Image (cartoon, rainbow, N blue to C red; front, side):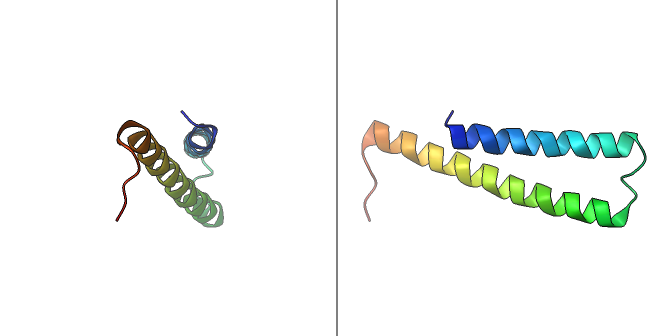
Length: 69
């Protein structure tokens, strides 16, 4: 796993843990906090997907050569 993919995965995991802790401690009902956390999670998910797709494409290029066209 590339460092970029690992970092994106870890960040997303940390945010999911933060959400779970917020729910457990009763602060998930705070609309400003919840909106901020949801936005950060959406950005983290997008970064994770982009890193994963990039890594898959890199592996594919290593196996069968770069795709042209």
